[in-house]
Image (cartoon, rainbow, N blue to C red; front, side, top):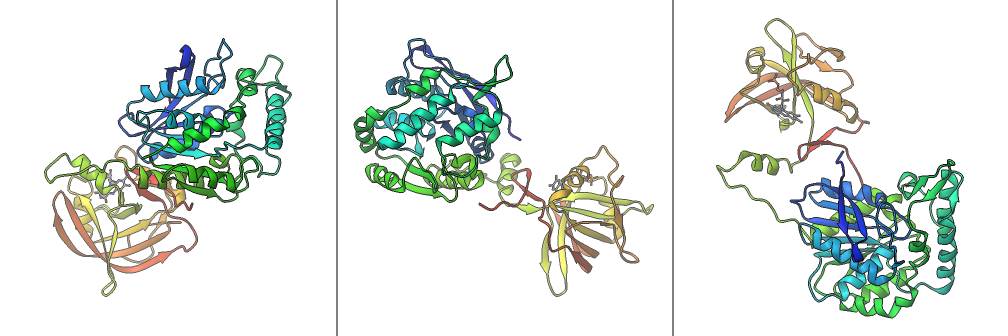
Length: 449
Ligand SMILES: Cc1cc2nc3c(=O)[nH]c(=O)nc-3n(C[C@H](O)[C@H](O)[C@H](O)COP(=O)(O)O)c2cc1C
């Protein structure tokens, strides 16, 4: 799993702003800003997905929230938040895409719309509501004031958060929401921020200013995201804001409420990544024949594959095998498959001499086997359950998703690898389990948005 590096920024008036960074600073930056009352942990799931997709993702705590500093002068107004955002953006290694929720989204609208300089390279506004009606405002105000007291238990904290959005799905992001709280001396849970930050986060008075700023946002990829069950912002409010921001688009996350990024994390991340790839794509990296092979490997790694263990017997009758993803189907008539083996492999000669092999396709639970058969330092078959199905058959791993028992049909030169073509004598498969996948140098699992 991608781990976070802590970052420290100097916000407006010198207030310390704390962030977590995921991924490489060489990749295009994405800055994630939470809403009132939340901590930066709220965005950790999306930040990890962004880092996996080749972005440098930074989540920050708003002033007066989480680990960021408190404003000793009580400045929790829009200008102070805008100043913080500009200071953080200026300290990032590349012009960031900003992903911001709730209050964070309103701050981003003001900062970007009112600036004449191009501060960012894209904007994702989650639950951005400029036009709170008075009932919603009153409800949020009283709920926020309750959130900043001390709670007896974690469940009480969550109940209070749910009371902010009573008609929405249950909170699945328990840990992420609790990250905004800390244990106090008596075992209770206390909000970690400055209570004044929540009480004065009410920017209703700034409606006109925000609407004017939104209308100034131009020449920027912008999308507005809303959970379909969100009770604090209507689909009409999103449409209205979208119509004000030139060239913007919008998306709904089905079945999510106010915490879409956590409640429907995979669906939310899919929408976010698709938007970024389309509207703020990374620069493609190119390989020219003869250049650094690492770049070619990275390019080839874009082709997702399954994972197999190819097996046979050595001259002493001992089982041999290695992890391979170079497996491919070749012909149905005759039934042929191929894989390739590095000429540096310690088992090359044995595979050549054996004249037979089996390809075992691994399922999602067999990653430990894939690791073991790719390492040189440990005995590979110890503790592995295998069998042979026929006279002159090769080792078949029990429980594999599919196995193909083959006679070597041909071998071909392939640069630093030898290509083995096998004629399938017998094949078995298990129709229900999911495959282990390999993509961009890492094991993966099937995932549906
Ligand atoms: C996912 C994955 C796929 C691999 N695919 C191949 C492959 O197709 N051909 C190959 O020669 N090595 C491949 N390797 C590397 C071998 O598994 C690894 O080098 C192994 O140690 C070779 O051992 P040996 O020298 O004992 O044969 C792969 C490794 C991994 C992790």
